[in-house]
Length: 510
Image (cartoon, rainbow, N blue to C red):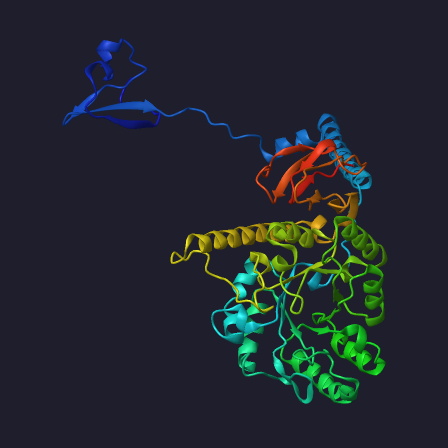
């Protein structure tokens, strides 16, 4: 190849190339057309390599227009267009078929904030915390949030002297409880964590009759109406009154109470009216619910009853009232704590029962740790489970309290997350004098079966053969150690040890 070749060439530098990899000279290759003469300068060998001679440039505009108008291309375009629309219509029809054939989801029932979680009653604010009064309570709101409490029922904290209506001041906080500013801090701390505050405003809470005597009614009426408006302005989310079955007969007073509490503007959070009665028979409880018109009613419905009685009470109230109206409690500010009323061996069982019945569970402070009454119905709350300056007996008691709290927290969290437990239907599947079993179910959500054996000595076999439940279930919680979460059980022969309660689950099937 001569030096005047018209093809553009590239210079390629080869540095420190092995002799056998270096390009051949013209004489060595014997081919004058493939490679140009090699020049060498300063140890650098340069080789001329020709560029590619042709490049694809595609069709010109004129050529494309000529091709686009041919019958073949027209048919191809129409075919592709028809296939596109047929595919699109097919997918649309398939989506419609899936929607039509899919089971409809049930609408969520109308619920209020007090239906979404447990309520926690703190009658004596000084017994509840190490720090005195309401200020100490404000510092414990985080602990209530950990337990998934939806509301706190506080007090009474107003000024009152036993059986002395002239000393009553429903708008003033007693000095032993704290100050208005401290109470506002409680409300602010609670609202920040999505917890509501209910005020126990029972007038004569230190006396023998919660509403004083008949002669004092007029004084109480004037005080109460003004106090309700006052505390609502301070941010209170509702009120609790003991002895509602008596005061509700005073039509003018009770009607005004309900109007003030339930009168709300659009978009405002609804306020709750809670009553408390010592009635325990289901028919009597239903009568008080109907006559007073309270949103929730604390009662003795579950106190000191057999499993058969509990089943009957729940069935009776559930069949006549919406579960959003039902409240379940054992004990309270006046009657005492759960552990003292049912015994330590049954604390977890009743925690499981209260948290899974259809309605709102209400606990007295300390029920989550098995706190027991001593000489007073207001024992000091225990917070430190890790103290090392205790004897072995005290350490064992604290470990048990910690175990109660862990169980309570786990079940409460499960209730908050699962629709079947929160507002699901209640289906009884077994009951006897010592054992009880029921299912909570909601639409296409996972189902939960709760089984409880109160017998002190005997193992109970529950033959749960019901159309609504499968043969196999999975353990979620157990109050004893013979079952572990995740275990698979056969429901045809479900054995419960003495004083054992379990929560089991199974999936929805169409």
